[in-house]
Length: 100
Image 1 (tube, rainbow, N blue to C red):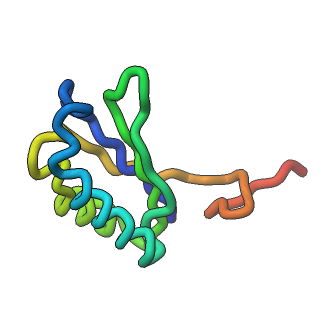
Image 2 (cartoon, helix red, strand yellow):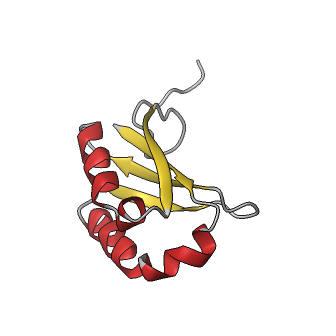
């Protein structure tokens, strides 16, 4: 299944992320190397949210990532949600649907 991890970012995200960025990126790249995290990044203008795209059998993998993320642990991320994403278009869609 595909999941989106949606982070709400602190108002001072751009100023405070630097202190924890290497730890956050290490966690993210390790998840990517295991095939769990497909891609992720923050929105800009305004930098108020980020989204990470996961592929896993269960949302528990995504929850575990969030709970271990230094950004969340140190308040750079102020909240998050995990949403199942029912992908239907694209070569990697989980449930591809084509027109009849």
